[in-house]
Length: 239
Image 1: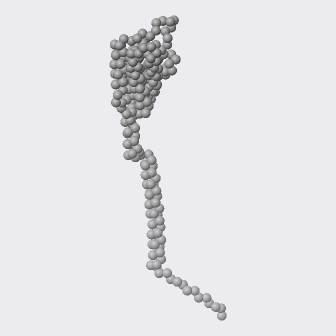
Image 2 (image 1 turned 45 degrees about the vertical axis):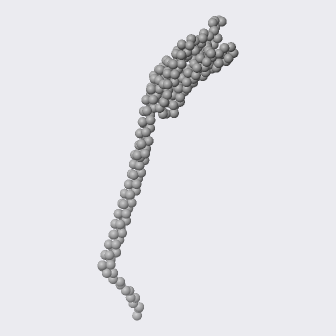
Image 3 (image 1 turned 180 degrees about the vertical axis):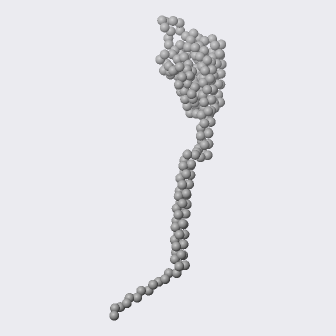
């Protein structure tokens, strides 16, 4: 008689099956919610990063505002400095013309008459004019680097002109070799003053172009071969 195998049939309660299905559904829902939350969070982070990159911070806005204010202030200072340079040029040109007659840069051609001593009254006028030019550069405002270079050079030049007048006046109190020595010193001081002025005028021309005012030539007359810088061929106001 053949053996008969016996199998036990396990009956799963319906309540347990439904519990597992519900649990799996909850897990699936939780995974979907987590995925959505993760995607939203990542999206928010990316968006926030983009906003942070494209939107300037309060510090950056403050820096930009200060830079704009500095640029506007510098532009105003350049305009005022250019007007001052023209005024001082007019004041000291006649001083330099008088000094050229009193102590010529070059010997007179064809053996003409030598230097003509300036009357004390003329020297007094030179001193007044030079002092007024120096006073115009007193108490300079704080400006940008290039503008400060132009201002300092122009101020130094008028001070050197004032010293030249004083040196010449002192030479007139001397005689013989001492007078010649001090006069030669005054001639060198005048040349240095004109050269320094040419540096300031060149720097002033450059900052005017940078500020949008175009070329502004405020040079002093210079003798050929003096080494002083001269104006470029660009027309006034051109860029």
